[in-house]
Image 1 (cartoon, rainbow, N blue to C red):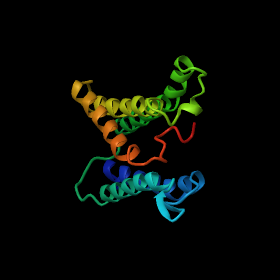
Image 2: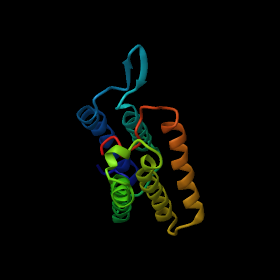
Image 3: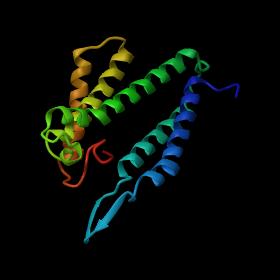
Image 4: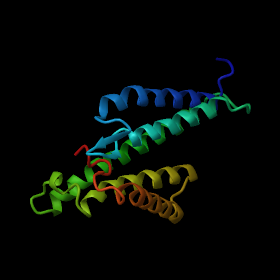
Length: 180
């Protein structure tokens, strides 16, 4: 382990995380595989999106592991950076999970988010606030300052995901609405 650089350590961590997601989390958490056939037509399975994400993380980890450049050994700054990214992720996912139900309890007649989670605008509240906060915060942390550019990138990324992932499919619930 003498030749373990920060890049290779990140690569190994990424590979381990991807393998854990592919072989443990996805099989335990999803009911259907990548694609499901219902009534003669194919639909997106529950595991398609997390599987694609895990495969990309795995590929990135392999690329980092076999990066031929010499680098420095892992440092406390590396660990602080990863800790900050994890913290931003946890806070953003918490906002994503609870923003919709909290606003429904305050503003919706009856306040039952479960009945509203597939109706506009309720189905977008958690995804937009949590996803936007995730992207904006990560960019601001890396650039060491918040900016309008980071905000517009976050808005565009979230809108793009909604356009590509939610609007074309009638039976897909954006995160976290499938779990609420």
